[in-house]
Length: 365
Image 1 (cartoon, rainbow, N blue to C red):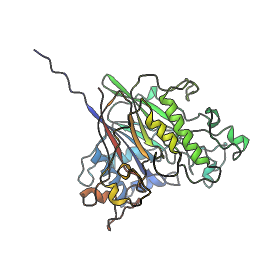
Image 2: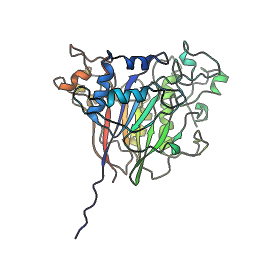
Image 3: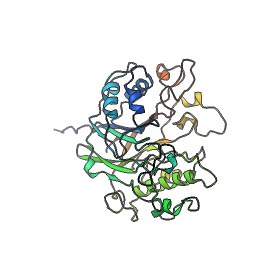
Image 4: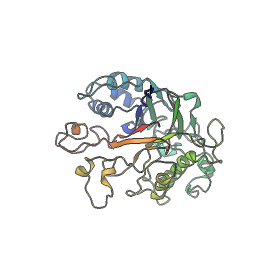
């Protein structure tokens, strides 16, 4: 008699920039508590529609030092756990809110509310633009690794525009504009490391191109974590990056498109071309082509931003089997297009977000 083998679960990993950030520390939480703000219902409906098992939310305000100030618990209880636009509720029993460099003053006591560029990462309060990880499976937070405090000047062959920054700034400025984290997700007897980050946009700078160069170097840091480079030292003092042979999924708004936009296309292309990264099954949508116009945009079906850029990624390691991928971007006559458009059928970031949720279904073996 042949004993049937247990069916291995297919896990959906997803990333979504929800744009739940505001310039005042409690401003977004206050908006969330208002019953008349339908944007959050739409965001929750998108998340419920996709039903991810592991979900990274970018631009979600929280305590700058990490942990939930109540906003995540409220969003889960009053939005995700309640049916939205006919979608099935979703519950995440595990979460991780890492500390962030956004809004953290470079110098103690300095008020950066009106000078966010004087923070370690652009932000008007500590915790603005942070990211959070939600999971249906246990997160091994004790063994999470972070590279939040890694200095930009310590990256070998870095591209910091040294002539732009004062010496005191160069000696303090961290590379990660938010944080670079690697956290184990425990799925039965298997472990998958989520490697997450949200590099600064490669724009909003001057002739020195400090943001473009920082974005490129943040992508290098991400890539070097995957490649276990020896120069790396995490916030706990442990050397190196991910151990060779471990399973991982890179997730985040990387603010980089290999074909379009103003960033350094070489860095994101190198990450996508890495022999240990699966990038062949590119998440796509049918909806993007109906809304994005312009001959200058290449591979429009891969767009994850309403301007036609591919900025958001879910990239599994080669040892994981990818079954299917996608981008939540319905065609114009689909019922759920109302989660992205106004009453006139126009795309509006204010309806939900200017980014689209990106997902990948993964079989462990």
